[in-house]
Length: 599
Image (cartoon, rainbow, N blue to C red; front, side, top):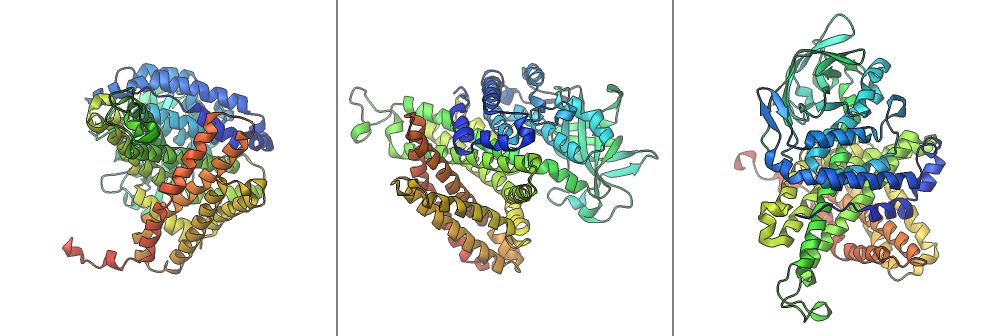
């Protein structure tokens, strides 16, 4: 089984050469006082050691043992508790947390790279602290000062964990149907009763307390989503920072799943459990979406992490496995056969994985940059633009990254051939583990509907125009620079220009048909994919420009490799966009023609 090697060189290239975070952080007073590039790279180096040395070795054993439930008690696999203690002692739970309550206050651009390494090393383990980080974000944004003072320090320290309790057996995407009740208790508390399912980390033995964020309805609540409120419900009650009595919160069972088996997916029962309102009555869904948007980007990054791990294993195997003879210069007469990396189809698979992984990493950083501007910048105009981009791009990141993550893990498995289907090589676990990322935190179809409906049609494409305009300005700057005559870059920019022009035209077509709900629903996934490939073309042009600039004074092979992979993306992957465009242009008549009873 391949050992995880943190892609620190590529991460450093993106931070320093592509996004120039030193200048960004210098321009934002709060970040200028918190982080510089040396600190950032030191943090990532230590995170890489943690991921590769401590967390990754538990991945296969954790999958085989799985989380266990006995008489209402959940235990994690051997080694998880000790690893989590080291994780918490290192301060990693509070990496992006508010310093006012004990967090480190690091920018999201570091957070997404940290998350990627954790997911690559061990997706099951990564999910436990990830849910806590998202809950802290929601609590910090919407909770009262008393709640923040009482709970955030112990959450940031890793002493306590958190979960997100939305789904019920009859209520998944349509949360307006939830039945969990909140009865006022005569003071500032409520009695919460109901059952939630599919709760990641709802119970476990890593932390001494679990702080649940629970969606529920008051007796006089308005119907549908307008009646949902958000409540903080501790597993064990807390007084004066000390744990007191059990709070009638129990785990009824855990799910037996295809993958992420070491992550406890729980059925949680609340039986008149004491809870505290977070935010305003009836505004619970808006409060929870603060957490859900964080989780959606994080789950997108799960796709990147699993794809990266699959690529590392497949590339190593392809260079070692001897089978058949290659052609031309790649052939090695000194061996009885050539390594399979010389064969065109194997190279197609490896380059597809690599091109999508590296573009995904860059795009995740681009979105994280917008999140940092939104959170830290004092420039109101910049904040407004960044907020619009975050809203637009979050569903793209969640769905596109995870779709490509599954593609990469399946390609990695295919490179191994029969060995990819055998457990000890690790490839089949990656396929199983990443599959859930297309489903939870809102299925990818729901993400596509969110993009095409709420983020494009409902605001007449205004946020889309922010993104397309930024790409056009980037292209204009390139065309006015001395690099415009570069024979490797110029064709890429020609294709980027054509791609964004077609996406603009496609968006206008979508808007012209928006009155027909079937057009939005039936074309949503194709539109998200067409959007994703334009975004990746943008990322690859940014990376290619940075590589060419660095080549002028540095012969590091990383830069040439970037250009070769960029050329592969434009030649062999970007053309996929045309299929999605053609599908949308054809309309949905064939999609809706078959009567329901004929399915």
